[in-house]
Image (cartoon, rainbow, N blue to C red; front, side, top):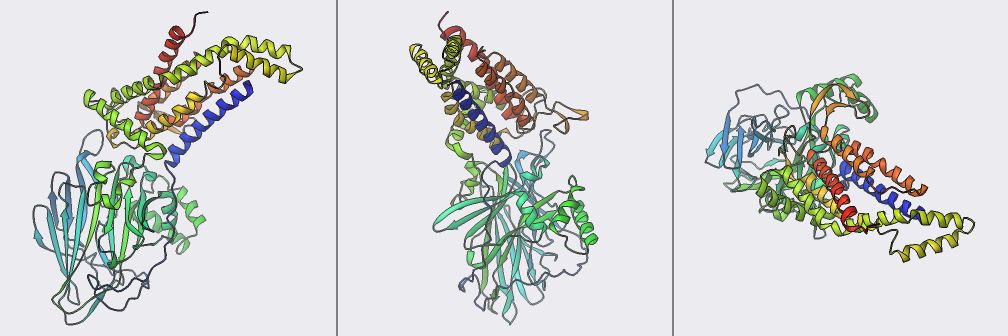
Amino acid sequence: MKKNTLLVFMVIFGLLAAVMTVVVYLRKPEPSLQHLPSVQPAVQQAPVVTGPQDMSVPAETVPPVIPETPESLITLENGIYSAVFSNKGASLKTLILKQFDKDEKKQGKLEILYQIEKGKNSFIFSDAYLKEQYAYADWSLFAKTADSVTYRYVDSEGLQIDKTFKFIPDRYGIEVTFDFRNLSQNILMRQLDICGPAGIFPEFDKRYLVSGYAGNFENGKWSVTEEPWSTLQEQITEGNEKEHDVNLTKWLGITNKYFAATLVPVEEQCFSFFKFDFVVDNEYAAILSQIYNKYGGRPSREQLKREFIAYKDAVKPNLSIKLRTQRLYFEATEKVTTFHLLSYAGPKRTDDLIAEPFGKYIHGEMLSYGWFGFISKILLAIMKAFFWLSGNYGVSIILLTLIVKVCMFPLTKKQYTAQYRMQDLSPKIKALKEKYKNDPKKAQVETFKIFKEHGVNPISGCLPLLMQLPIFIGLYQALYVSIDLRLAPFTMWITDLAQPDLFTELSFSIPILGTNKLHLLPLIMTVSWFIQSFLQPRSPDPEQAMQQKIFMFMPILFGFMFYSMPAGLVLYWLANTLFSIVEQQIIKRVFLPKT
């Protein structure tokens, strides 16, 4: 029986360690976006002008060098955004979220979109055949209001294009409108590549936090899938980007941990496919150029991996979204052809993501609370209520942990009571084993009699742990994805609960951990957990003693796992451990029968 109990405990803690590993490193299931074949859509009356449709993709061509001319910038502001627009390609150069600080030092507001790669701003577009240099041309300012700006360009064949950027009122969103008018006497054809949001802010400078999302609508059902950066990097670097049919994939987005920028084509019939694309800083571009020159062209996958090892700290790629239109035919009339794009650019916060017009595209699914999302949402609501009272999210986490411990007290009491009673019965059970050492079945029967006589269930201490697991996972997910913890200070050196608590930087690298950053909170958590383990009921039984020794390694394992975790999560586990020590002593002194 004790072997079975030991096995159950090992399974429970093994499961907990596995769950933590999956949650930390995988975060959520990440099914790959499948390659969707190009579909020949029916010819539309408007806004696509009728004409023969050829979906062949033009060969890549190097654009001609365009002489540098002075750049003209325009800034629009409302209560949400401060946006800088450029006449170069009629593009969005910088988008600042006025309600979010850039870092804990409050030295500026957050630039959610910025020009990471020279000449590649958000919402530029180019001719897929590179006959017209829309992305490099100087567009003229045509109109400007308090919440919109319109640029105009007339190309070499007489196609007039008006591009309008307009803030969506009271929303984290921008509407981009394209108006085409053929001023010539000929039918003109264009196929355009539109660059969606380009270069989202890499939160905490962690490349793995930048990823792609896609909203799919197939067989009458919506689904949202995530493309992690590791997958996209291989695809893009190898020139094997996946193209996603607009008829199935209704929108794409780029995200970091707390923010997202998406692209939604309103008139789907105008468009052919999406794909994710590179946006790279100048240093990365120089490295990539050196590698290509070294191998005389595109290197193999193995060669790229080998070369990038030497530059891993310098390589800082980012993502953009490429949207290709169908072939558009414009007749020689006074008619204006129009299509629209919508772009959400803001926090991954439920109330904002589900607001119209983005709610119908299920943008809210980008914010996932994992397996026990309903628990996470309840706990987040409680935490925010405590913040309203205390004004400090660190205090809120501690109070939330206390509430959870109080609610789970009946189960915990049952768990500890079973452990202490098993400790008291250990001598009797040991004597039975010695008495019936040649008859294991008889020993087992007599052991069950002792359990029944004293009202002890040997697995009753395990069941509360299993029942508490959903609460733990739900609270963990809530704290991990909550944007409310971003830049939220607690006390002393803990200035940002969304990042590891940096106590100091050492002059040497810490062995095994491989970093010189000293995070004090995980060390305090590990020590307190050792104290809790030491105060657990001790058993003279060899099997149970072995079980306790195994448990003594858990603080070390979790200490490593928690070392680089956000301070809010470590604070929760530390508070949980300290409350457990107090809880254990209360149960021992108040609820156990006196012997």
